[in-house]
Length: 473
Image (cartoon, rainbow, N blue to C red):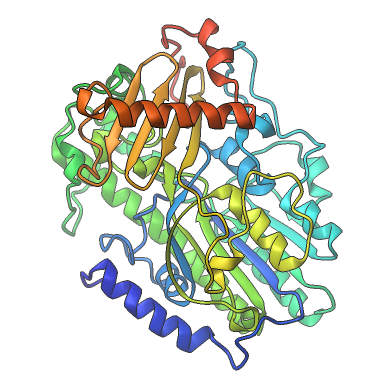
């Protein structure tokens, strides 16, 4: 894909999208749109060609050109189960009670349980509003029997990839033949989560050098000086150790494998969107694409996901295409948004009750207006991984990011002058006032939202030393 600037892409996106999707009617339709939610696993915010030219993703790029790109979208937590609990309920993990991946060890020494069967989801709320609902692919929230009742069609296949496309494609064909009720179809792809294969290649050394240039992220300069010690421990002793100390060729291999896993996901997204076109449903269907969380992709000499809140891990792609009949306006938005916003947005277009959620509807932005109350910041939570408990809370404005670790101190980054988050300013007296103001804002948010992490976890995990017995992905 040719190199191009973000400004050039966005200019083309608005022009091409407006031509293809404005439609004859610019006023919002009185009918209700169909809804298609596509979720990838472990896709970071730059992992599509329009945002990062290293990646070849024609399907995602086409969707971005015809829809609205949210450039500052964040997951509520950089882990699969808790993030998905937020995406499908509109609530933060501490409220869904899914604060870690299913069966990971909690601070009490007990396994993380499933999403409670009593929880309302996107499926149940839209079904109550008269929608036909379907779910295909990775679920990772447990209680399959209970939640299958939220959907008219459900297959919670955790390893599904091409299978999810085939099943969703057949469902779309059925809905095209029986258009009496609008539908909501959720399609969940496993990739690029299969990047964990790179760990095995690194251990054996049996891989070929990439046949194309692999750019080195600027944050490869990371030394971890002044950073929470747990980050380097993850790199040296936990899942990062398969690459730690290896030549750059190993790190380039990781990036090449990740790129290929992203390409595989994009190919399935392309097949799905082609099927949507073939069924004649595209012009009556809102399409949203996002990810449950990102991947470090060797940034900061870190891989996979772990106890850190860098942009590569918490910032995710979010693009939503709204047909012109419902006022869709292609372009780009710099609004600070979270995955909790997807459910209320879909419910708004569907005329459904979103219930008590932590998100807001993005419909105003998608239809060329402004949010009534734009966010000044977003908050993200981290609990731990497998048997290693290291809670973190992040608050991020457009200019600064503050991270509070339960056991490992603080981070404060000037995102304007240090977008790669290389210099931790938490102990810099010149930034003390700004840091304390953001820390106070985080504490106020936690109090308001009932997040008692600091009180709950501190007494039981002071040394942060609980590593898992074996690597688990």
